[in-house]
Structure formats: C-alpha cells, structure tokens
Image 1 (cartoon, one colour):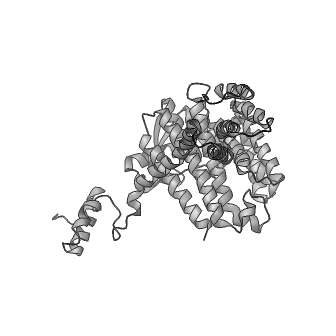
Image 2 (cartoon, rainbow over the protein chains, first blue to last red; image 1 turned 45 degrees about the vertical axis):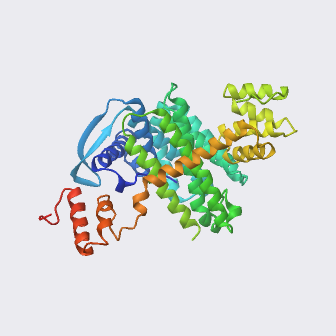
Length: 275
Length: 145
C-alpha cells in the first residue's frame, strides 16, 4: 500500500535527488535510533513526502550527518534530521503497527503475527509522544475495518477513512497551515487507498477478499475511467493546496513528486489494470 | 455565492456552509426530501468539502442540467473541472519530453540537434547527441567536439 508517492528520479537534478534522499535516509536513521532496527523495514516514501512538505512549510533547523549506512557501510551518505523527522518517524511506526493489527484481523498470517509482536514493543514511545494522533489513526482504521466487513462499495466513504487518517498526520500543529496541510494529507490518503484497491482487485477477487471495486472485476475499462477521474481530482486538490502554501524551498522536488513521480506511477498502474 | 437562493429552508444550511460546518450542512440536507436545483447545488458544496467527490460532481451536474442558466452552478462545475484539468495539463507538460521518441535519445539537449537530423549525417548527429549527454553529466565522450 505504501510507495505510491515517489519521485521521478530521472527528472531531478543530482543535487535535488541527494537532498531528497537526505530526508529519506534521515528518516531511516531516526527510526533506528528512536524505534529500533525493526521499524526500518516499514520505511516508506509516503512518509518521506510528509517530511519534505512539513520541512518546507516550517523550515526547522536541520542537522546533516554524513556516514555510511546498512546498505553500504563504505559509502558516506547525507542524512538530514530535524524535529519533523522525529515526528514523521513516530507516525511511520503508528501507521505500520495499526496496519499490522488490521492485517492480523483479516488474514492472520504468521509473518504479520511476528512483526506485530515485535512492533507492539516499539509502539509505546510513539504512542506516548502523540497519543491524540495515535487514537485518531486507530479509530479511522477501525471504521475502515467495519466498512470492509460489511462489504461497502461506496468508494468515497471507504477511501475517506484513510484520507482522514493521513489528513490528521499531515496536520502537524494547530496553526494557519493546518487547513491546507490537512487537505493535502486527506487527498494523499484517498489517492493511496484508491490506487491500492485498484491494483489489488484481481488478487482480492481470486482470494475472495474485500475490495471496494469488486463489482467491476468484469468491467475493467469502465473502472479505469472511474478511478482515473477520482484520482486526478484528488491530485488536483493536492496541487492547489501546495500552491496555496506558497513554499519557498524544495519546490522543484515537490513538483517532481506531485506532477511526475505520482502521475507516471498511477498512469502505469491504470494501464496494467486493463491488460 | 448564494444570491439566487431565496428559499428559507436553505438558510440554515447556507449558514453551516459559510462556517465550514459541512457535515452539519450535509446531514441537514438529508432531511429535505424535495430535491430542487438549489438542493443539488448545496449538496454538491457540502459533499465536495467532505471528500465525497463522486456525489459532489453528480450533484452539481444535476443542478446544472435542471438550470443551465444559473451562473453559480456553472462556476462551481467549472471549478471542479479545473482541479482535474489543471492537474492533467501540468503533469502532461512536465512529462512531455519523456513521451517524445527521439530515436533512443531521451535527454533535453537532443531537442536542439534532432531537427537537423534530416539534412545531416544521422550517425554524426547521434554521436553529437551522445557526447552532449555525456558532457551534461560531467564526462566527455568525444573530446574533439
């Protein structure tokens, strides 16, 4: 489900790519230090986007460390860490934990059981730092779970739970930026849920699992048009909110993600769905 | 935005919308069984702001169909279309070069040289392109040009 909010590496300058990777690597390091090695397994690009946007809005003081890492101990990589990285790491942990809990309810797979048990120990520090966010996330996932149990096919209703959850994550503080940030988060969440549901339709149908598009399994072309309409609306909303934020830094990286990385990814997935 | 709506039963709903209490507006609209053009218009506003995009668009389309002369309806419909169209246009323009099949060359510097390819030796041009690409990234494929 994660990894739909990516850069288009080919269209970034080297400097921009290194800067983006600095946030990603900073998140990884922060997860290791604050939440244990295991939490790095859930590292994701969507949360890196969160860091990028919040950092560009709030301009916190960042620390830049250059050191080797687990993927290549001999090559020094830039790692950017600031207050927002720490916040995002906690959100990353909360999301992963509650998602695992959800997986267990649905599939009860052994690997999820193991990860869940390990994660439960790690959850504590994230939960204690941000109890309100944690409760909100848990609550929205519960609502989503119930909608899925009753096989609800109102796609807006279902995707909005994930939208609300991401909106709460993006709404870092109660201030003048909250409205736009929440709006961005909401639409990111909706986009992720929609694309994931679309991509998993065939698999879910075969395994007799819930999917909001289950009625469209024989009408792929029609579904593609419908999903394209919804996704481009959500992404248009994100674009507008980003414009409204009037950011002064990282604008080309954010533009690359919103108008290229995301666009190419979702167009690709839409095409795959009708093959 | 509401200059055309004189009906009192909607004044409470309009208040909710003005105060950004879209969920209250949406719920209040459920209690009104007679669905006129204005009902659809207000429903569209509420629904869109609650993230119910399909219902929001369906409602404004219905309102517009009932009364195509209404300026407010037209404006709202156009604003929704704008979100989508603007996004599609900006992403299309951003990724435009990636679509261009320049005989294997996919970097920006080739935009300039390929128009000459018809007149000049094609192999020479390709070599020039490759060398320019190499130089863009800091190397030098052919050091005499």
